Length: 321
Ligand SMILES: NC(=O)c1ccc[n+]([C@@H]2O[C@H](COP(=O)([O-])OP(=O)(O)OC[C@H]3O[C@@H](n4cnc5c(N)ncnc54)[C@H](O)[C@@H]3O)[C@@H](O)[C@H]2O)c1
Image 1 (tube, helix red, strand yellow):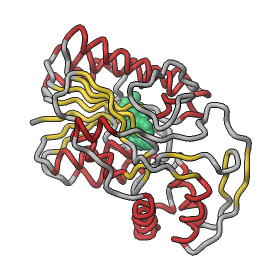
Image 2 (cartoon, rainbow, N blue to C red; image 1 turned 90 degrees about the vertical axis):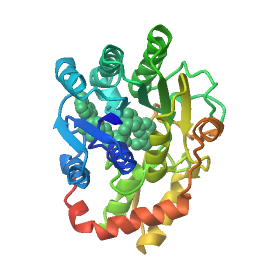
Image 3 (cartoon, rainbow, N blue to C red; image 1 turned 180 degrees about the vertical axis):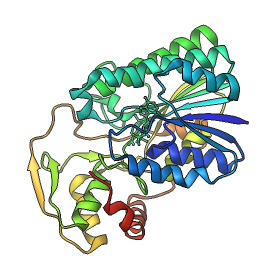
């Protein structure tokens, strides 16, 4: 079986590639290695994959349909996992166009290619950011028609396009709504990576609001496993992948302080209107349809992340945040 994975040098992409490779799949990974955050980190993740048998990488921009088509025509993937995206709520306000080009238009390109070259399965990565304004815990049946950032709007647009392609052409599509993913090789624009590095280096950390905002932090290994399980043929489904165990930022900072044995210096800034106060995933569908439950607790996941940071401190100290 062959799987095309976009955004393979990304945080979730590299773990998903690893998961498919470990299960015996042939994986073609593509990524444009853009500098939305430090490219060194993307190259380090890629290094964990390129030595593996059955993995091929090509530096390609997913918005370039001709280049992606050449790969799909030659590789003929059974499964397309579309993880390439501009991710980040605040940055999407500064440059909304790139968010719609990558997150929405490139998804349309890939759906067209899935149709033309008859891929059996399409997996699309969506986000908990769509649940703004809804009652928690969030379930997939809630209406999510009021996205409060261009990032969320671009993902919602891609989700509804996926629906259309399932309806018209019968493409088997599973949409995964991920909830704040963290862990080794995480994203330097996200709080847990930043906080660990900055607290350890004695630098001040910035908290937007008073730190009482909470997130359903979900460990990367669980997300990799859930994304692999989503290859199952289901017709059209939207499924949350979250830990069902929210924690607030104050607790995150306290736990990191304890694990590092260092005290954080905090600068408080105004809460951003496009941020959500809290997220909490309802995960009944993931359990029932995919047989997935999160295995790594918040305390265990943070412990493993800090241990990874300490082991790789030399490399991580060079990463710009
Ligand atoms: N990390 C989270 O907490 C989270 C939460 C919800 C949803 N998601 C979604 O999961 C997916 C993966 O997120 P991530 O956290 O791994 O982000 P990431 O930024 O680490 O990974 C995305 C990868 O896509 C690549 N990419 C971006 N634009 C591209 C383009 N035009 N062509 C080719 N490659 C391109 C980037 O270089 C990057 O390596 C994204 O779709 C994101 O929206 C992530």
